[in-house]
Length: 394
Image (cartoon, rainbow, N blue to C red; front, side, top):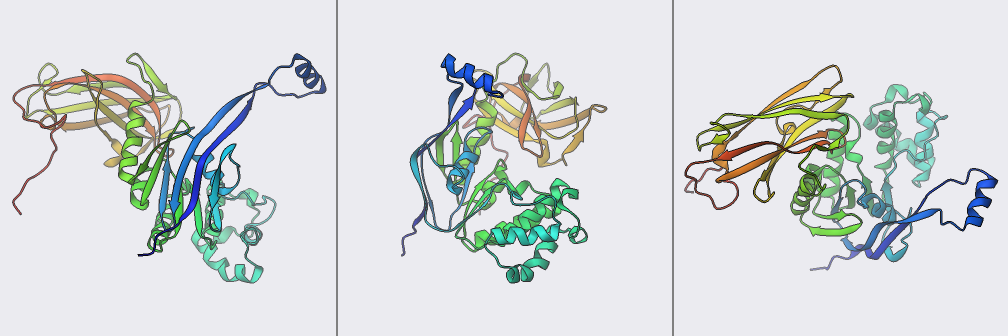
């Protein structure tokens, strides 16, 4: 069997940025700061000794919370940044889908920008004429191609840029959150395209906050935490650890909201059972009331923790079963979640309230221990929860 080669090798790569403390906006400020001998910056280590091999034909996911360093790593691979220490080796041609539309000219028409971007990707005019119809049909903006790009919405610009970029024929594709592009119909086209890449065994590096996409497309994944490589392994394993980090590693206290970005759960109430105690045949019902200071599409979630030691037990989100909705300052949202008590072992559990911005997949509200419940009675368990499952002889 022919051994696969590492088409990308990252060897002990670190990236350090200088963060300025003040701006020299005049000759006077330059002179004053010079004579004060003040270092007008601090050093931020965005990546810390990352070592990683990506093999030819892999669909490789890179995940991490905002500010973890994943986009910095992608820009190192693309050659946009150079490592402060260490090295990055890329053994093939590469196309980055990092900042789509970066080569667009707002004063030119959509048609002219197609040919301009095509030239940047290495296609001549004759090749672009052959591809032009497919590009426009994929972007779904046929009527607007002779309008200036400055009159396009941001969504239209990104769709056109993506439609052009996927024509590139290179060994490696670098993709940063492209799956969030456009409406549902256009996202389906993106998904179909990535399915084709996967079937063709193209080498793809995908940075995403969408764990469903990572699990669906990637054959391997890496989790970056505060600039360090936390885990490299199966996408399900990496996605599960990422979700657990979002639930536990935000250093959340027991008093008040630690995350509150203008949307909050004003009440999280537990009903059912008797005096907060639930027997095997009881249903645990959670009632949410949500308000907002701004319009945002939300998904309501929860984390269930063991009260004794804070161990994370389970979680779920409303968007698994309910279409995410836009909440505005003029409205409130109400949710209800029913969980069979029989799924839990004996003990006392606390419920953390969580709201996600559905579009960015980032938490915009978190409050520890908004509700509690206790399970009682005779229960057999081999873990913290009893799986809701069905056994049969086969």
